[in-house]
Image 1 (cartoon, rainbow, N blue to C red):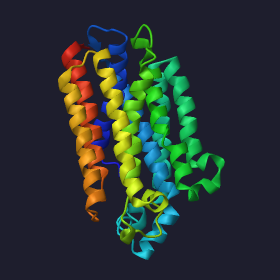
Image 2 (cartoon, helix red, strand yellow):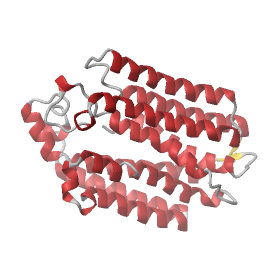
Image 3 (spheres, rainbow, N blue to C red):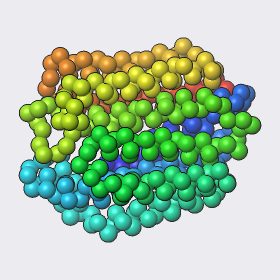
Length: 296
């Protein structure tokens, strides 16, 4: 669930989209990449790893139960097979959170304060924000936990403030553009047809499979609209708008295909949301550098 060949580039795109987007919104002629960019990427990676490890720790009991019931989606997980022990993940969680704190210290006062605040939220999420019943309420867990991705983007803003004279209010739109695909991904990975449901709680079980199939599309649409709104304001042209639109259309077509001709394979919308996320982030960062230029 955390392959470095995917998570490291994803963390880089996340931080660089915020860092370079802030510089472009502030009117920078040439964008600046520095050691701060590297440390910022490592900070995002630390946050994401902490959240991933916490999810595994929170799901230990349910994963073991689902594996015993024969759910194929959890039977091969390392905690279930015994390849990884709980103590290993506890150690990794500590390492990742310490790494986040170190990144905050290196990046300055604003980043350190943000590290403490966002890190506190991450730790609180491990305890279900001290509302244990939330564990059984998928929608409540979504609205309380998923915005942590936006909080990490806010940390990126704090880490990048020394690089801009003023922080544009439009950075909020940028945060939405980066966060919405993460919310879409969270829903997309928990969509199943009625015949494929198990005791595992999915969004399709709670909301109905057709509603759950449409929500990732709507969130991708929000992200695409935010990126397109920002495009002329950060100096991006038609090629970026076309790329973002194409990625969103792919998710649209896959959602329509699922609703019109439902199959187990088509219910897996996750790869298409991931395609949009990677394509959108890469296009945004690459075209910012192309249009503005960059120096170290």
